[in-house]
Image (cartoon, rainbow, N blue to C red; front, side, top):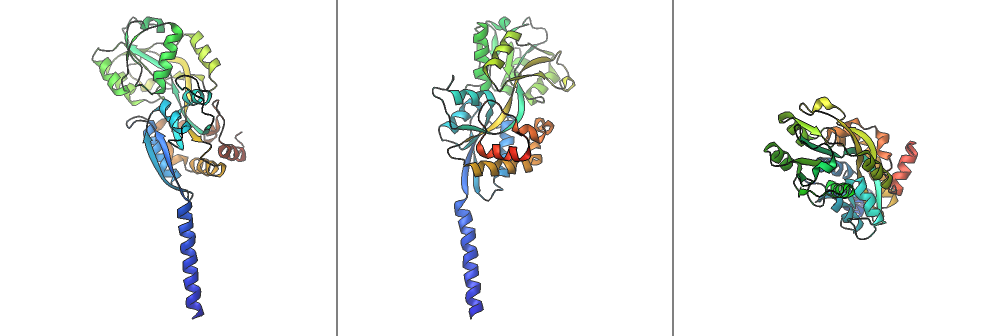
Length: 314
């Protein structure tokens, strides 16, 4: 009889522990990019890895874009988001296009870099940004980081264009059809729409003026210089490469909602399972694990900071 009672108590306690763990698991929302872009599959892989934590229930992906994702975290509409570092820095400071500062934004970790590029047909007369005046130029959809950056750079140059807010694939098709003079975008080193364009049309890169590069880097701690593309041979009909302003994709978190312990657990889980995440985007495969700790001008989440310090990366 005692054995039966003890077994029943043990079973009840075990069920209570399981229920307690389940009840305390926190559901999260992760603001992501559009389907078809590189951000989306990365966040799918991230969500699957993060859901492996006992402290996390489900991770729901919320469609958005680089600029709008920062607002989603800052305004409490998402606990986590993928975005580009300049958008996060602007959101933290309350710079345009944001009306107010969002001091609850923190960086969990850094991902791969994006690089400002301007593509034109190889035979185009456009050789610098000022030559874009009056031209038909795609600057990406409203709400995307490149849209905001392109407007800023054009304003710095005092240039007015006929702006098209096209998605990358649509912009590439318009250039193929001869209906677009230039495309301003921020591709990673292996970017499918530009690989497609460079396989079918001879194209050329228009460099940023050096004074504009210097100003952008001076204004934003997340910017640095690098070459695009890293492997020119990957783009068969691209005539040149350029040194340009670059910045990374990052994961941000609302520090008022994501506790230090949860931030620590998420960061640890991502680092220890990064190989599965890297399989979602070729550009991630070139990263060293310590690159995830690179700081980009916004505060590290306390949990991430603790984990990176334990690894000796800070």
